[in-house]
Image 1 (tube, rainbow, N blue to C red):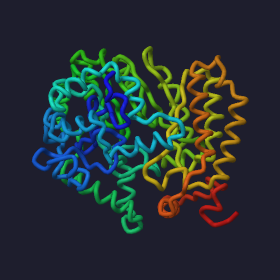
Image 2: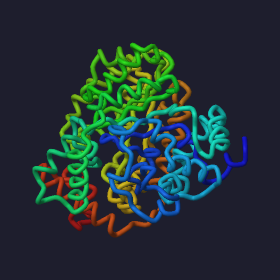
Image 3: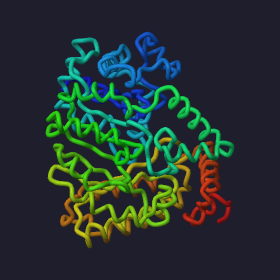
Image 4: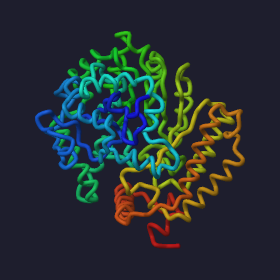
Length: 449
């Protein structure tokens, strides 16, 4: 590979991926931060200016109004690709830099994409070099968000991504924290101006016209299983004959998953089915309000029926709330594998944004106690043995979790105070109690030891 592949700032993502937001704005990738959207040509002058100013929604391209080609080879995208080739550090890429330094041993998105797809798509980078950042090939990987339609209002979520949370925030407008009020305001402004991408026939037609270049489609929410736009789009790909060449990655809470949807997914080349389940029992009901744990459990065997070519995975998003009780979930997961003989993998990711949900808000001695419990689990579980098909990855992931929990991390006082304020708001709005669900946190919420 060329030297640019080895530099610390090179990233393959802007040569491969288009990431849509529910309102139609486009991001370079899901990990990018402080980024409103790809700026229109008439508002973009240089990357230096881009790093020093904020663009308004009106100054950004929108898939409701602009073609994929306009955005994909815009002045900004061409300049951004060349910056990556030339090893220019971009402030908006700090999430990956953080993951690469304090990620607990897990590769950043930049690293993982480059390792998996770098050789296969090197030609795209070479094409961009010859054309000053422009690409004749269209996006090979779509990271799609079409709306905020969702059946849950998770504590970690935003109104931009959850219609149920949006309703709740509107009902409690006067009680919201400044952070939540800001997120509500942004959502309402964009809803009034742009509407949802799921409702745009123009975008659907444009998307299907360039389907020949698509290799992977990643479905995000809201909640994909209740967004009709996703299933209209997937049906269009099946009818056009492109489905058999495309892999699907779907992130879902599985509560509304149906057998008909499983049949549609099985028309594609395969892919990855990711069930987002963060905890069990009362903790699940608390974190993923207003879901009920019994309803979650009964749908797990449904997606396990997907055919060949599918990787089936349960993914935990670990936040400050349940980072000290992960062992409970893993004991449940063990039962799924050992007693029910389901071929499921397990993975996790720490919340790194917003700061108030980061595990660094939890005292080290509490995290170390959980790390000890997980170490005991590691030493006795059959999931680390060769009889479990995914034992190597399970070992690696579990050890990464233990190491991270044992790491002394500096706590940001503002983030900690936001953790307390956000918890207090949600507890009052939902008649819940964080200390009842997580009694080991009484010292945090009530100042008790």
